[in-house]
Image (cartoon, rainbow, N blue to C red):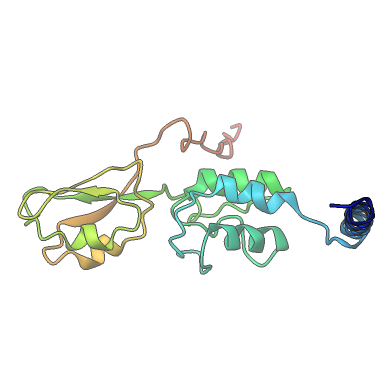
Length: 189
């Protein structure tokens, strides 16, 4: 290569580098001033939700439900598998007061298999979206409660009605101190 071609090549490389640097600066400034604000609370709420994407709340998944909760389109207690403890944590996260009535005080449920009625048909295993049911063909099945998100699809699918939804045994994560009752006053007499 002669010197003239090397000079032209160096100028071309320099021009492309200068053009790339200029476009990078323009894109950086545009990203800073033209970006939409991101609400980090939706990500934090999604992290609290079970993450099972069971759609019992009426949304396609937990991220959509979290965005709806933060936007005010859904209540903090819209997640049935999460139960009262999850609803309380979500309400505290977004800064709203959770109204507790009789329906919110129920414990979360999980699927439970009655061993005497299970015939091992594996219909429940095929319906379970969280792989919480273990077993094989013509063998008794069981449910891993830590993996079950209480969608109830296995209960509906079971031909022998061997699967029922039972409340989760309270743990430190699900137990709440009961609200105090009004004191009884004794009339002086």
